[in-house]
Structure formats: C-alpha cells, structure tokens
Image 1 (tube, one colour):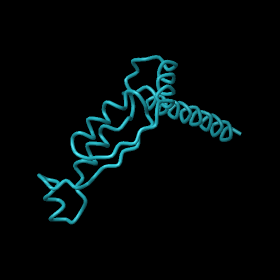
Image 2 (spheres, helix red, strand yellow; image 1 turned 90 degrees about the vertical axis):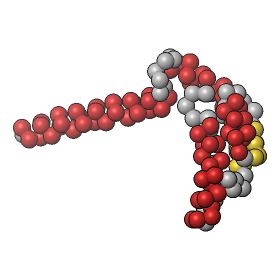
Image 3 (spheres, one colour; image 1 turned 180 degrees about the vertical axis):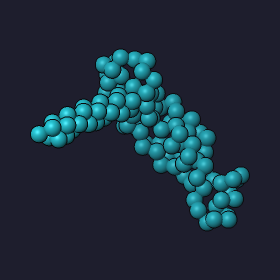
Image 4 (tube, one colour; image 1 turned 30 degrees about the horizontal axis):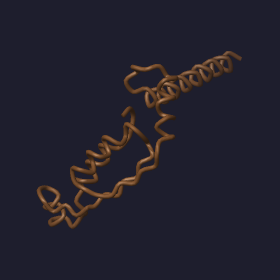
Length: 117
C-alpha cells in the first residue's frame, strides 16, 4: 500500500515537472529575450507570416545583406544561393575536399529569419 502511494506521488511529481519543462522550452523559443509580452510576440510573428512571399536568387555578401533587411517585413522568404564562390577559404575547401563552398550558404543561414527580426 505504501509502495503504491509513493509511486503515485512520484509519478505525479514527474508529470508536473515534465509539463513545466515542456512549457518552459516552448516559451524560450517564443520569447528568447523575454523583453516583450507573449501576446505582442505572437502578434508580431503572425503579422510577419502574413507578409509577402519573396524569392531571392544570388550569392555573396549582397544576398545575406538583403535577407537581413527583408526579415523585418516578412517571414515568407525563399533563398536560392549560388555556390560558385572560389576565393579565400571557400576556394581552398572546394579544391582540397571537393565540396561545395559553404561561405555564402553559411552567411544566408545566419541572416535567416529566426527569432526576432
């Protein structure tokens, strides 16, 4: 009887802790800096989702700069990144390892609309 009560209490405690941790992880994604109220954050994200759908094609510094600017107006952005970079470290990686140059793709991923614009 005592074993059943202990197991029930332990199970309820673990369930509550699991729910608490799950809600905290969701709130961390929604409010990384916790500077705004949740309602304002949800409104901002929804307004960005309703923004225009934009496709950008290119590469280099210009594309990542463009993405950084566009993410303030919409979250419906598709980027087609040209991987023809042959200078600097990207060129050495391409020649030595036979892989696509990661430089431009990395810059565009960093500029991608995640979190707050």
